[in-house]
Image (cartoon, rainbow, N blue to C red; front, side, top):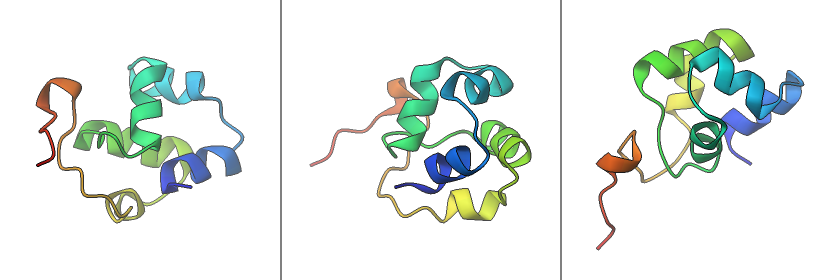
Length: 77
């Protein structure tokens, strides 16, 4: 389980609540939780404050993904 999902469950927050706090749709939070996409710095700070988790923990969640939005997605070779 990823750091974001674990923190959300510990804080007993719903996907919808995190999405509303960050100003994004639920699907974006699902992408972040599955490590398909990485939240922007702005969103990472908002998540950090809302879920009481250090930004560093979000940043250190091991993933090989380096993009933040679906349109920035780089196809794996």
